[in-house]
Length: 93
Length: 424
Ligand SMILES: Cc1cc2nc3c(=O)[nH]c(=O)nc-3n(C[C@H](O)[C@H](O)[C@H](O)COP(=O)(O)OP(=O)(O)OC[C@H]3O[C@@H](n4cnc5c(N)ncnc54)[C@H](O)[C@@H]3O)c2cc1C
Ligand SMILES: [Zn+2]
View 1 (cartoon, each protein chain N blue to C red):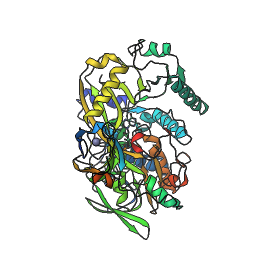
View 2 (view 1 turned 90 degrees about the vertical axis):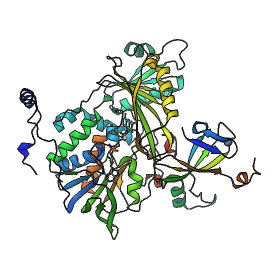
View 3 (view 1 turned 45 degrees about the vertical axis):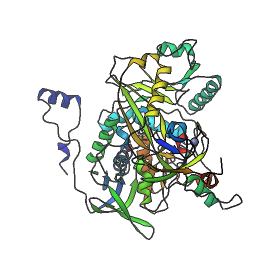
View 4 (view 1 turned 45 degrees about the horizontal axis):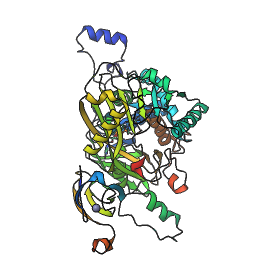
């Protein structure tokens, strides 16, 4: 079991969370008409072996989206923060 | 290269002779050559797909100046880790014909390779657990039959005659509404597939180089001219990449970013039993499948663990989930001991379908995105990848498996899950 330290709920089993994938992709602006940028955003991945920054949602807890830094070889969790900066600052609850 | 005669042909006669002389006369099944400075074609990855590609390059195209470079040992990757199921019950154009061609190749493969890969067409029952699923199964079966593929929709009674030990009770958690049955589906001995293709390629002159990891590419003016490896630089006019779970990593060495994520998939085996399960069963309610190996163990698996991973081992929640699916489908398994579990790294593509195609680098070809279904594809994948490398153009069977199909909107999304690789 991976243990994710949710900043709101404390240490919880990863089975309480939904995996949201790579958090380092940047979504083009909604009115960006460039198909190539949308293609890269939606379909391409760095898929690193080692440190991966990824989203998890605490669906069986506070339901917040979190940003997790994890090693894809050892599965070690290196950091967990709230995905929304406002929530991280403590005024987003 | 040792003389051809030393590479003996396997036959009933040779088996008898060796049986009578203590099995001391078998020659090694393939050579262990040092890499040459240069080859016409280099294949990266000594899994099922890389070895099959080398075999068909030699056999179908007469291209024998070929090396297969494997970072570990032949067959140590997914080809030796899968649950050995082969079938051709696909519904989307592109997949349907390709997987059926593969099943036809399996049917003649032992003779073709002169190597018993133990093809067992025991039939697969894909169970249906609801009315909507029954309609979907009927439609899938019709698509298969319209393409000349065997498929039968079975009633619950017909399912029960074949596998009476499933939970048919009125209180069953997942009532059985029937099954889509493919009689020609079954299992193939996975290690034998790696070894058979390896021996077949070696006998046609291909060099199989183990303990040789590719660490970089030589690319001059947009064209590949060779690879850097832990055993030195090896020149090549053409390079084929077939490294399954490592696809993203190795492609990045050539400057490519792929529509692929790497995820771990586990498999499990119980203590051996007397013959119990004569079919392969796919369970529609949960993602779960099970068959019985020739040694007697029940071999089964389910979903991916669900997060990016390069660790060839899985996690406990999935073990629990798969075990509970097993017990709700086949209550009699609940008292069995599970003796082993292991994991393999899956190259999960963005639409669940593979890529067999040229890349933006001239002379570099890609075979990837097999998700957890690439074992059944092994012979057709090798056949089509060899054709693509040899002629520079895709075979009609892999024309849709292009790398740029996502850009073109031509996805082959059998499950309709969208670009969420952990859901395919
Ligand atoms: C648990 C599990 C169950 C499965 N069940 C089924 C099933 O029932 N039916 C089915 O059809 N499919 C199944 N699959 C999927 C199937 O096994 C794979 O899709 C298929 O084996 C992948 O192709 P391959 O055999 O060439 O891969 P591999 O055997 O993984 O070959 C890739 C090779 O590339 C080598 N390599 C990697 N990087 C480098 C490098 N830099 N230099 C040199 N070599 C390198 C690796 O060492 C490896 O040997 C399953 C997979 C798993 C893990
Ligand atoms: Zn929480």
